[in-house]
Amino acid sequence: MSKPSCSKNGWPQGLDDYSHRAEITNVYALTATEKLYQIQIIDPVARRNFLFRAGQFVMLEVPGIGEAPFSISSSPSRRGDIELCIRAVGTMTNFLGRLERGVMVGISGPFGTCFPVEDMVGEDVLLLAGGLGIVPLRAPIMTVLENRSRYGRVDIIYGARRPSELLFGYQHAMWRQFDVGLEVIVDEGEEGWQGPVGLITDILGQRLGQGERCQFVDKTNAIVCGPPVMFKYVCDMLIKAGLPMEKIFVSLERRMHCGQGKCCRCNIGSTYTCVDGPVFDYWSVLNLKEAI
Image 1 (tube, rainbow, N blue to C red):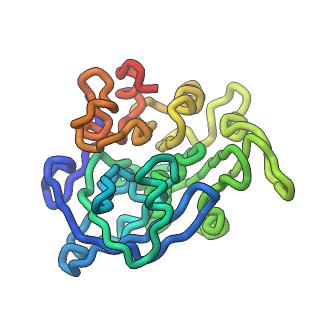
Image 2 (cartoon, helix red, strand yellow):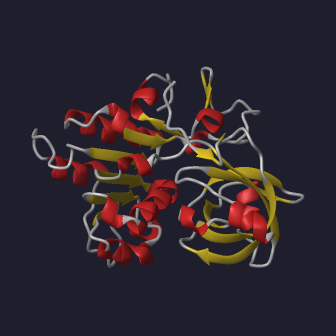
């Protein structure tokens, strides 16, 4: 199994468990179902030493309620001040939706593999997100933007079901200021929406051209996040355009449940998304039956 490797202080991620007391410092409603939680580790030394890579996740514990894995959706440069974007879909996440700033929680991690953005220096980066996939994609976006001069062409293609479900819209203009090509599309338009309506593959197809080699395929790396059904269509288009499977990276974090390899609900054969992932190159994903 091939996977991007990440380490912190020389130790493989996922083998060491760091637990910290933390405080919810701010809560922002992004849509009707998603909120952004800003969380700060209490101990100043632990906060300074908290290192993570784009694509990794933490275990968030609410005392008396439970714990669950969530992708970190903020810049790795912020250390012990992290952001988690959470959709209210179950008992714990609905309880989180009622929490306000000042509530104490527990943070364990970071865990998992990462998007190897450091290995993409000097090359082009194409980032594609569908729906909630923009959440894990936000960390590599921030990493690339903070080091913009070190990368070549940067393109972001983001699709959602409806305009009211788009996330981080307040940052889209800022992303474009960093010489980034950002295209946003929705499945269904709503009143006031003036952007394109269709599928993310429509935008990608326009960029790839009609049967021609894409102008940003040579020396290009792709990061794809979204519903698993999206991977096959998007990644197949990239492969047909000439992008090697080893340079396409996807996150299977949506398959995770306990985040610790105990519940066996994310296993694909002998591979566990939470232990061996969640980030894989697409060649590895194609060798995992039922991964997508």
